[in-house]
Image (cartoon, rainbow, N blue to C red; front, side):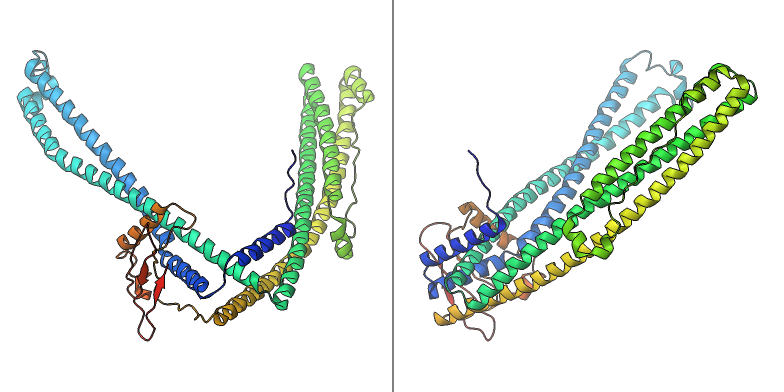
Length: 476
């Protein structure tokens, strides 16, 4: 069964319909705004979670690397101990390795007994350092577990904040949709029109980018054809030099055949360049060309070169003409190669001109797209300002007070859009990281007293207000 995807305009209409439907089901009153403010305040109190999570993950990577290094050192220490024990046992119990006369490498170092003493001293040093290595590795492992727990809790805090922001934004849109103004309708219509205009400009720019890439690919094909002809010219010179020196006829014929192959390869590359260039120029949008006729003038002129090739006459002269015939045929082939190179150079220059025109057209379209994006951004800012004005009017109509941008408040509410464990983890992590974020979040906010209730009836949260503000009790 086919499923049709809605267009952007249909999606916007559906979103507006959902917002209106939700606004009808939600009572926009003082409790509504209290709930919205509580959600926003708690989301504000969890802003630290993103930075703390990034820092914790970085620390976890560093500590994990250090733990691997500590483990390598411990394993190396154990390996050295086993190696030294084997050496000591071999020197003490083997008649061959334990006899100094049979171990000349120990003669200048005090013999086997001195070797055993040195190995025992090193073994004792390795054994003495083993506990510190083990304790360091264990400490790093414990740190890794703690950091993993912190990272998991911070991920829950981030998920909690996003859920809070999503519900608060939904409440905001629902309230605004319940009391739209003519100004908001006008701005929404303008935003939709400019969004469509921006989409058209971006589509034109994307098509011109592909056309520019096609022109560049055609130029590369022409370069490859010129390169093939240059190699053919070198091969032809080699065949002529071999003919002058009266060298091997077999090698000379091989060079002549390779020359002809390179000339045919150049013809194929030139043909492909013309095909690629034709497709590229056909992809130039007519709307862009009609809008900028001066920039688009000359776009579409494609040259399909037909290069000269060595025919049967040249081959017959080289086979049956002897050295003189080889010389004449080689000179004729060299002239054809040089003329072909000139033709391809002209084709490459014409293609470069086409590419320059396409790029100029592309820059003009991109400028229009940038202007449309800037205008759309200004209109969207006006839309947001109008929505905030509507929201503030509804708040004042319901007898509410604008939210005070004071201390971040963690309210005891049910988890929104996530598991209740995420709420508990977020509150625990906020308390655990209070000392870590003193300079970032706590410095700008007065102390907050929170009452956490992961389940059961709602709990009122007492908020310590800043100096000059009114202390309020927010009921979840």
